[in-house]
Image (cartoon, rainbow, N blue to C red; front, top):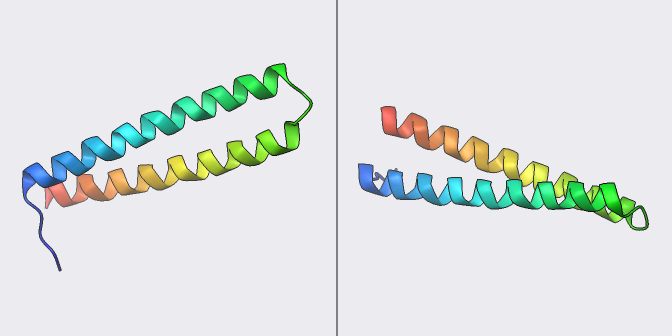
Length: 71
């Protein structure tokens, strides 16, 4: 199993948080589009579900990084 330094874990954590922030912004953008434009609602809902799953994935990764930092 590969080991990471504390600095590497911190860098990974910052990267994951950055991706989480980007994904949250995309979710907000899509929710705004859904609120204003009814024409492509199905496609927008699919995109929303995709980004929600992506956010959950990043949250799991962040949780694992936190556990690694503690150990």
